[in-house]
Amino acid sequence: MAWPLPQRPNREAAPEPAAAPGTAAQKLDLATRLRRNRKADWARRLVRETTLTAADLIWPVFLCEGENARQPIASMPGVERLSIDLSVRAAVEAAGLGIPALALFPFTDPNLRNEHASEALNPENLVCCACRAIKREVPNLGLITDVALDPYTSHGHDGILRGERIVNDETVFVLVEQALNQARAGADIIAPSDMMDGRVGAIRAGLDAENFEEVQILSYAAKYASAFYGPFRDAVGTNATLIGDKRTYQMDPANSNEALREVAQDIAEGADIVMVKPGLPYLDILFRVKERFGMPTFAYQVSGEYAMIMAAAESGYIDGDKAMLESLLSLKRAGADAILTYFAPRAAKRLKEMS
Ligand code: PBG
Image 1: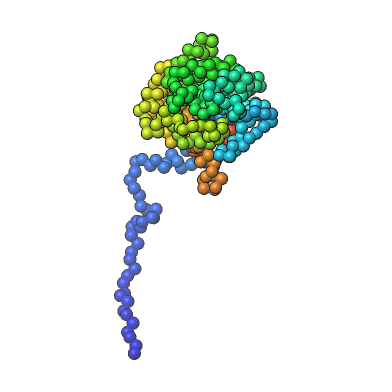
Image 2: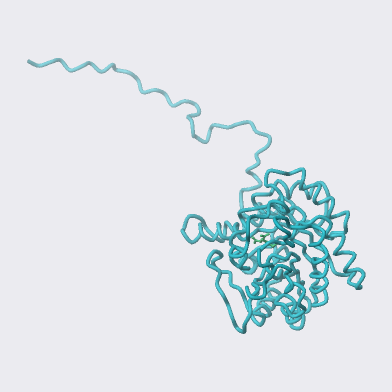
């Protein structure tokens, strides 16, 4: 049995609408089109609000004993501890790349670490010897030295431990001596990272009393008790020594208003430059500090931030160079005048290639 075929209605094809979705004829009546300024590279360059240059970068360098010695740091791919002779070569490289300054951090021989951090006051310690060696070869490169006792104490804390407490005032007296030791060796900028109360004022007075009134103070003003310092503690050997944590002196990551009080205090005590640390997780703090005080303000892109970008890049999850430059630019956009970063030489080279 044959069924009749269904009758197709004999309809006209629908007429093309005057403006079909996605055709050139459809227009919005927009006075402002923000995309206009992004239409080409030359146009984007003309309206760029923030720029990153080698002059924004400070290179933190880890020091170790020996000659022609390099010690890789597993948690910081591409970063090595350098013996003093090689730190001089790094200084020459930095100057050639247009990086204005190095920040020096020592890996102190565990046998030289003790309760009093006495090696911090030794004029022949790694940091002082490196300052003198670098100043001889590259006198126009800025040298920043860290003031805190953690690379020198047997317990890995930034201050003197009495019972269970890091004692503030006693520590400050030692920090002043440490700062003077560094200034005598030629440090240009003294950078207290210890978070003791009153240390900036005490260090300023100590420096001035020895006619070091030209030596600047870069205060780690808002420094948080952060998990992102882990790889740094490998580099200076304090993961092995640290007992407990640093939450009685470094700031609570939950706090923001308190950061402004810390910064205000350090400015009142004579800080020339203030710093926020870590970097990317604390962009809000950086922004508030710069807005409120208008001070020269630095950011520290810390070891854990470096390690995260490197690990993701090495896994092929992100483009390492692009993530590096974007993170540094973000810190500048938020208000940083300069950035301490382990990417400094790599970023400076990349910026040179791009220019
Ligand atoms: C030491 C100091 C630390 C860093 C700079 N100075 C570590 C800490 O406070 O435990 C961290 C830098 C980094 O993670 O890159 N006071």
